[in-house]
Amino acid sequence: MIRTRFAPSPTGVLHLGSVRTALFCWLYAKHSGGQFILRIEDTDKERSTKDNVNAILEGMNWLGMDCDEGPIYQTDRFNRYHEVADDWLKSKKAYRCYCSKDELDAMREKQREKGEKTRYNGNCRNLKYDESEKGDFVLRFKNPLSGQVLVSDQVRGDVIFENHELDDLVIVRTDGSPTYNFAVVIDDADMAISHVIRGDDHLNNTPRQMNMFEALGVRAPVYSHLPMILGDDGAKLSKRHGAVDIRDYREQGFIPEAVLNYLVRLGWSYGDQEIFSIEEMTKLFDLPGINQSASAFSGDKLLWLNQEYMMNASAESLVPHLEYHMNLIGIDRSEGPDLTEIIEAYRERAETFIQMAEACRYCYEEFDEIDPKATKKHLRPVILEPIEALYLRLQLLEEWSQEMIITSVNEVASNFDINMGKLGQPLRVAVTGVSASPPIDITLCLIGKERTLKRLERAIEVIKKRIELS
Image (cartoon, rainbow, N blue to C red):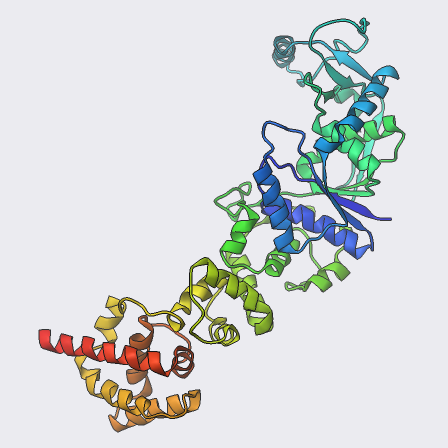
């Protein structure tokens, strides 16, 4: 059975690069009818935090990437790591290294002076010691001294490493804690991980890990190393590009499916298709479709894709997203239109749900003042009589509908021999406080008759004051 794993370290939050790795692991497992395991690699006790663990779990939950097993914590498996370490020590697959930090620094300095690659020189590899011997030591894995390691990478192809270029890796620190490269091998072996999909920054770790799998007597997983994600300027992805907590994208109003769709296209392709449903991603994703070259992150492309999802999804399915962001910015929805009506009216005008929530606020709440620039440009003395006439016309409407509203606006504009825009824009500014909104008939319907008339009264007073001061 295909079994993949996503194994983040809680030394930081979940960002885009990690999410893409998780997504590829999740999709390949789902595509293959396999299982996806979530493992928290928290052996770095000093830097791992509960808050970061929560950030990872909350991010995965928001994205909808459910796991078949987990979360499994490495800190719960220390006994297992020590069991293997003791076994390797007894079978001479590992050894104690008593070299101090100063000795290791001096060793590397000599290597640098000679123009050699810096690495551990095996000083303690054949050292004989008494079990009762005192002093700090680490455990090192006895890497083979000759031969090659062939990594048949599903993305990069065959990569060959010479064993004599690999040093003896520390597997247990002086405090007894296991190192990453050791723990990950034991975990992948015990959890029967068949495929490891991860960033190509781990490629140099792979031959050492494969040698440790051999020492365990377990077949190594199939590896796929993903090229990195770059910023749109060609530099390594950082916070200024978008390498932020994935939960920030929720707060900014992105749809999780849109984020996943964007990330799946960062390094994987299926013809020229840009937009994929989760079902399509699961059906079509496969390892041969992963590109070898690095991908560039584009915030503009992500916004475009998010709006595509907002435009094409059913209004009902988008209600929870808008509801969340209206709550986030404190909009009281007790008096106002149904959220499906808001979505239908505003989705062409918003790239994110936070934009939509802010844009429709005037449909639920009063605003303190009309935008000064819009007032100066549109609420001029010349429009006073048409606005007053429209106020009276709307006041008499028994049916508050788009059809009746637009008919009233057109009739008043015709009576004053002005085009609809000359009246519609001042009307828009009067009832929304700003100069942009959905079509005026839709806007007034959403605001409601009572609020519309009240705001028109205020706008009329603003115009009259301008006349008095002129």
